[in-house]
Length: 455
Image (tube, helix red, strand yellow):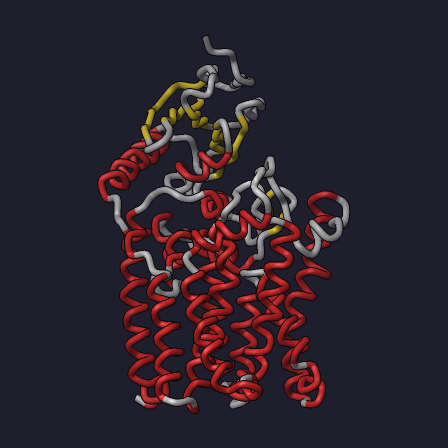
């Protein structure tokens, strides 16, 4: 009960609502047997604790979770519960990003860090949460840099605070200075190039859009649904600043954390979106709503500090500041994103089960090697991750020759390839966007080659 009293009934109510939303999301995720692009890519390589895509290396916190889940031999459908465990409310971005993405997990850890830090809790817990968060999102290193920049005098003046910041900085330094170069040396026999491959680890992975970086960024923020909350916070801050005038920043000096956070917030936003503007990381997917995550995170950090700072203001100012934030947050919600397509998911599950049963009946051995041939890899990750989660598999582009040691071949229909020689078709399944045919080895020596011309 002591913990509940410290949290307050308001906090308990928030946790209860968040738990109910998480339970509903878990039900949705468990019922959906398909994946999005990036989450499907991670699950396809569930046997690896670190995954790279192109010349970019994803931060390993989420992948380690998937790897451990795979290592324990747990059912494929439950892997999506990893992100549900970390989910944070029903904000539109959390729903649009989807399961097994780094952003929702990162923001959950970030908010946990903010809660502990703002209450002055012991540093070890703060350090663990912040270090974990930094291994999910690159922006957290920038937030740490902004906080260090604005508070460097108080940091060097306090031995305990200096040790804390040193420990926190050890995480990105170890990753960028040791781990990333080592992975590049192992994979490419060279060091990463500066600044695109290091420290940004940026990879366009396709032709760039004609949309400008500014247009793409604005469209992404609009789609993310974070602008109403940002506008509400800006309106509340402007009202409080108009009332307090020259002592506005001193209103936040009630703790060292609030003093640093409110001054670091604009610096962090300027750096993050300055880099987004310059590098344009979503050239291939312009208007990507993931551009809204840094703004949402900083809004979550500033909003409670703004409400607390308004405590000394007249009732009218307090009411306006609180109402502006609440209205802005509510305007960013999108309950329609939770629509559940039960019939479509049931058909996909049934077809995937047919594939699993056919492969099992073919008696391919203890660890059969399954080759997946498709026009593009993302279709494989989206459709076949669930039924083949624990299988030994390899993706083969349609333009390449299939390896000779495949025990089974799963071929995307309609891409202009003939049936593989020396294999028997054992099943064909129809998923929402594609049809797949599975073939089991009849004898050695399959010769499936590049695409043939169709009339």
